[in-house]
Image (cartoon, rainbow, N blue to C red; front, side, top):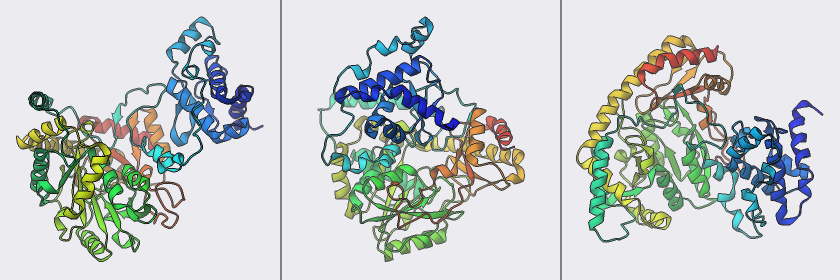
Length: 536
């Protein structure tokens, strides 16, 4: 047997006898055996466990049971799930395991109560019925829930990053928290005096008026409060739009490639057929949108993740496509408050004269993500359906948060904060560009970008795969992401991010992404010097 097969045979050997258990005892027996092997050191930290499918076949058990076994051990901290990278034995010892190791009682934990001991009922296998045939039980839908989650997997806590270029997150320290605490306290005092009630699913009138005023002033989007639906962040906006606009199995949605995975996930979960469309240095290649697409999702002001701006000519062509097809456009304007170049091009919603554009905004970048506050500026014809979908989803967004943010906007705090952050992000961006030029020189090219909280850098010279470079940088505690991470899956049926009829049209994935929400200007030089060594 080859060396690469040894870990699999070891794990199978550990579990072979336990796999003979019957009925509701099976999962408990497997759990005891595998946990005891980890505690006793037979399975060493970092050992890669066999895939659940291979384990199930080797032991003659269902794959659901194998998945449940790994999930249970992960929840207790004995193994670590790495997504497509598989599952490994954890390096960090849970408290009970540490105690066993100190006393030499390697089998003590196998006799200790565990989650699996609480009940003898094995509910890891779904009963017969139609429930697990819905999209939410598919691997892509469940994987999407963790694709951008900051929550760490069980196991060892990694050392703090020396330099963190994570994209999509703002700087938190400069926020005027004292002002926000005062406004939040005011909202609580008002709530104390008001009778208990459920608020409008469309959002508080005060919040909708503040949003309408804000987008009119900052993005020239002409709207009134009645056009606005308040959501729990941009992600709920995408979910509501997918619920309302997609006919499962029939609606074709054009998505940017590379693009924002949670947006893709929302439309995939609703049963849309996804058509990846190439993004280049001028934004979405409108000419490549398949004929008959009913929905086009786009980030025109600061394309995610490449950072480019959709050109004026392509904006015109996209609006013509929407008019002629007919189709609707979902415009995700997630971080356009921060601009560093010429006067920004008008939002697509500003150009809309026939009710084709749904404008999605969020306060996750201008304030902070955990507010969970976003909005849709929608055509009048779609508002009743969107409000109905919002009502079914969660009735209404948090009233206290809406009151606080509405006051924050009304009193001018948001505009002042945005101006302050504009200067901070400009300094970070300029320091980053200078450091790229100084340490990478002709090997790298900063892709065009005039807005937002991140930029992309294309590597021109021959080099190792970018995932390898990113891994080397991570070993030096420099966190950087690759553009390829955000590419739509190639047209593989069941992927959840594409449709066999619409394969990827080809795109340049050979770039690194640099967010500057978590890194100061003074850190850029050292960060790029370390990254340059990772390229060597």
